[in-house]
Image (cartoon, rainbow, N blue to C red; front, side):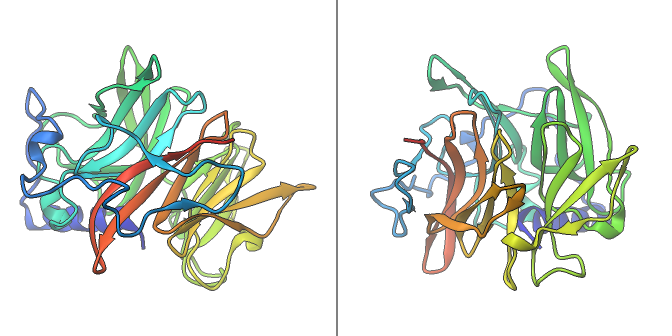
Length: 311
């Protein structure tokens, strides 16, 4: 269904075999220490499929510098509206099977802070007790709450969880599922928390993955509605709202598309960045952060977080 679901499926298979994941060490290894020595960092000058802006609203995108991007895979980024905190998923080698990634000691969610206009060394976001087998990803952060997908010991299948940031740590993680039949994939909440956009291949859509919206009424999530204006018979996924909630960004056909809200209705999306651009996240200044995957001969080599500045 999507990258993280494939990742989770592999973790589930590990649990089923009784292999478990590596124990969380007292001192976590660095991300760089797990990147294979034969992997060379790809740059825009060596990229065989360089991504470009297709709109005069944005500068051409550039990759974030080290220490955020490495020769490994940085993926599924989420920037807070102030543009000073960036969450993302990392795995050191996208070429190896995901069942090996989850036991390497570094694959998971990270966060980097921007201080004096420079991104700091990312730190691991721990969302489980030590020595617990988990696979976490597809994070969304609002205030002191993080939503994330996870497969973990004690649960069957993939579930949504939340955790609370308290006393400098993420604590009180708990299951926070939607009704199972909604089939909620990666998501984005409105600022008031009362609407959630998500992608799903649930029945009743136009085909493949579609974008859906569910509303919270008296504490319960309503039956999802298809956001028909942005969907096609192909795959539309990874929705992201701009901070003012007047733009809806989606991933389609290996590019990033934007729909604008006009008179309360979403308009037909326009292709904004291509090729191999996806999973947008937007700050208050309108800057777009997204993932660019590097391919050669139809093989993915790595992934980086890019930013396109609003002019």
